[in-house]
Length: 136
Image (tube, rainbow, N blue to C red; front, side, top):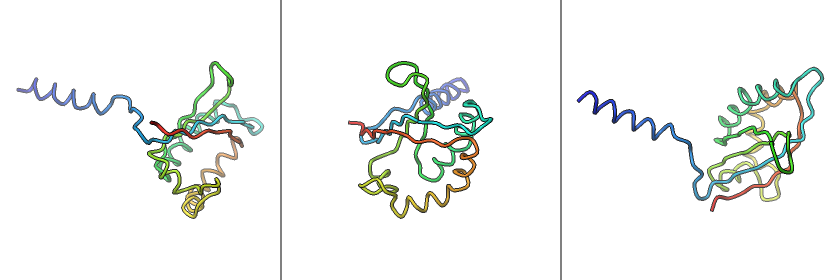
């Protein structure tokens, strides 16, 4: 009986722990970063800050997942990029108007995030070129 219970729990957790697949309607934002590191800051320090602080703060304030990635082949080798995974276009549109400007909710989110944005500026500033994709 204990073995059956253990195996059942193991199967349950393996299903929960498996990789998350994209769902129809998800919005995937792909961004190529033009990064300008502050003097004395290494790219590794920026990456560590982004992964440990900025990404989690963004997810807390928006529900979006942000993945920092590095190009290895193609048009942008050795460049950093971002992949945003957002539940839907509607979720993105809560924070951005159709013309790309911030909505009222977007402005409020920026106020909540100002501390982490200020902290990021100690590491680097950056611009991105992006494309938003909808999973079909």
